Amino acid sequence: MLVIVCVAEDQLCKESTLKSELEAEVTKCRRERDNLQEQLHKLTVFSDGLQQDKIDLNKIIVQVHHFVALFTVSDIGLILLD
Image (cartoon, rainbow, N blue to C red; front, side, top):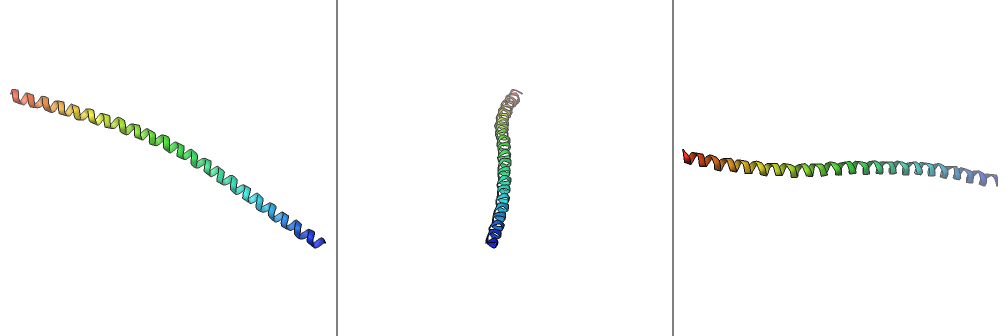
């Protein structure tokens, strides 16, 4: 009877240790998941900023093209007047 009790206690001790290790691993995974979600959020905000910068840059490029075209037409007019 004593042997059975000792074996049962040993098994309970091993299972308790395993449970603690698994709980620690779950906690570690949750912490890593939270960290990755935070990084994803930061990258999303950064990407949105880059997208807006691209839109703004394209607007500036269009304006520059309009100015170049305007000055080119103006230069042609001046050449024809000379």
